[in-house]
Image 1 (tube, rainbow, N blue to C red):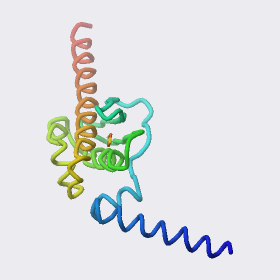
Image 2: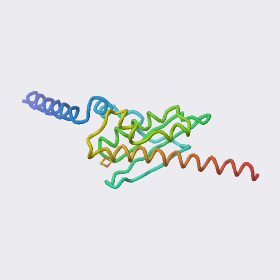
Image 3: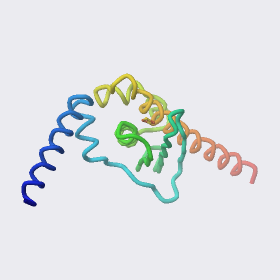
Image 4: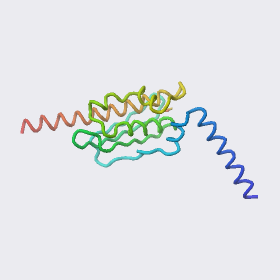
Length: 152
Ligand code: FES
């Protein structure tokens, strides 16, 4: 009896996975199964939290070393697509300088993951905008440090 139920649950799960893969594509589906770079970073150099018009919130954390991103991560309470986009945004940020980070946009995230259904493309925009805000935060703090250093 229990094994019949287990088999049914497995079959349903397989069907859901197949349908999800068909809608989102292999790259996004695989990432959804393994959301790397998820979690907060203590004492980040760059950080932002944005809430999209859909009501979902994204956080991006950046840690720099020698003007390059050494660590990047995301957190979101949003949909699966937003988690996938946050994960790719963090991955794409790794090793980048501030000038290179500016080039990470909703479009480049969508390209990287092979596109999303039209109605979920805004999830990539939320990830990209949060990343750019985290970069702004970093740049603002750098300028403050520089001007503080000069004034001292
Ligand atoms: Fe809100 Fe995806 S639906 S970020």
